[in-house]
Length: 75
Image 1 (tube, rainbow, N blue to C red):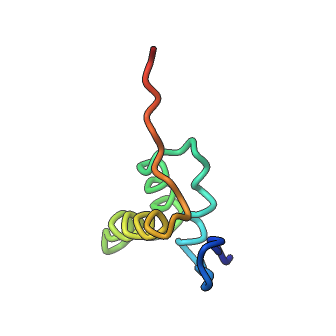
Image 2: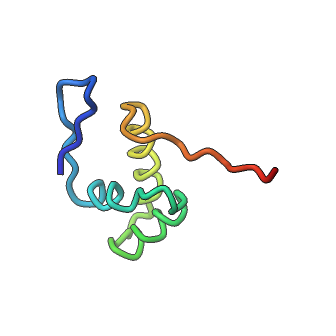
């Protein structure tokens, strides 16, 4: 899978857990929901999956490929 922001020249190629994370980003799942699904899908023997996923999500955000969800306040 490849992602390309229209303001950039190089695509971001996603494989393995990165591609799964991208597919799980749907605007409804929280980061914790995504981490939980990753742990169910992939073995995390070293306990590093969540930290790596957090770095990956931050990378996507810095490249403006995703935006953080905004909390909806009750009126």
